Length: 408
Image 1 (cartoon, helix red, strand yellow):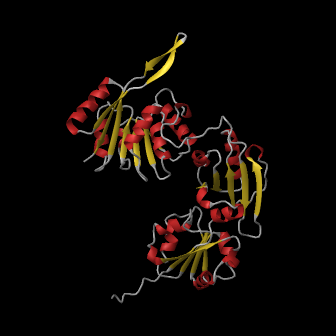
Image 2: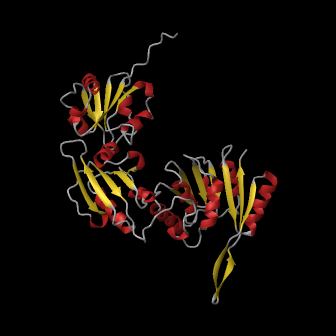
Image 3: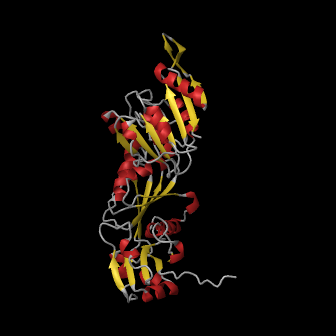
């Protein structure tokens, strides 16, 4: 049996609500009183001023994600105050990237989402939650489905009206919005309005927005499946068509947290759908044409993945210095000198490559690679019904040759 003593937990992270000291337990109060240094927002520090004996330090502006001031005090009695649950879109997550868990003692409080669900009587496990605090409002777009309940953590008092305008523009104007202000404190307030008639004013900057989504027949709904309709993307014809895209995404086989390079991205549709598969997915769209690159940026915002990274430049030169991907798609420009080779070299072991060809030149490259390296070769041919005079007939789309390969 080891006699080794447990490591002293020098850092205490305490979640605090709008009710301040009244909502804290005895242990949290004791640790605040014993702390030599107390970090938090100015509002947090004011809430515990009656308890604190140590030096109060407000977070710097801009916020230091490196947590240098906290790290410099390692070994001393340090307390960090956070809103609600420090590990739910909170400062605890930032600290955990720098400080081992065995050095931290955490006392969470209910998150703003938990408080909102409790006030509304909503089953939290059945509700979509999203933090738009300091983030693009476009992130809400993939969640907009009829009957969905959404809780949104906002940045300020202007956000609810901005979200109401966005919902109205997208055909969700009938949706019910409830603004929950200063939850848990003496100034708590709940107010509701329809998105198309939103007229609430003087909203507390500390608010959670609850959405009950209702849609019109024209609402812009992003289906959960891959292979989104082509008309959901702005494009100039340079787009991996819906059916081909669905097959391509299936072959790319997205896995949580992975990074995709979409080379010759065109409209950006493949990279966008890759990111829509899960919030942890990341993608880089490489596109040489400036007008198309700008179009990709608009499509990414319109589809709710504003985090898509766009690299404007021609491959293979534009690939230099990019983070190593787990998967690569080549949809355009693959026959240019060095593109296919550079992409294959960039993949790590077990990395996945999918390349589509519509030209004879690109197809010849893929046939040669398949002959020498193996992988899977697929021919995709589609036909659509189209008018021929007063009748209908099949019109064949350009066939696509697809090569997929896993790097040994």
